[in-house]
Image 1 (spheres, rainbow, N blue to C red):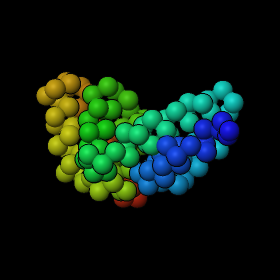
Image 2: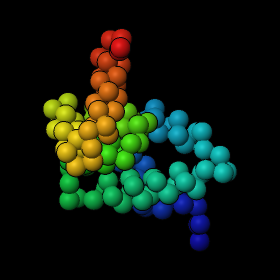
Image 3: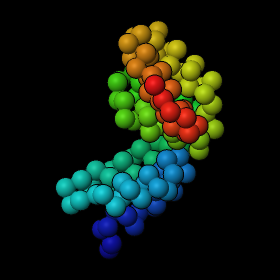
Length: 134
């Protein structure tokens, strides 16, 4: 029996979904940078987050993207907010969708969390648009 987690159906599905959302370049960097120490973590998130939750049929990638952004912003996970704002280029979530998600964050998780998320999104949009950000 093959015990390599990379050979499981869930891992393969997760890798495919992860690539479709975050892009090949991001996923390749994460996989290539994995060491013996954090490789099990990379496998876990590929299988659990991407191969299980993101692969479910109940919500579209756009809807999952909006929910993910709101949760990450509410929890103050700035690097992940930036990464998932960039990923909206692949998920179909619009800038209007992101704004609406962050407005919800302001009411349900607090103005400071939403303020930070808006700032991060503006910086990422500037980078995506090729313009300098302030």
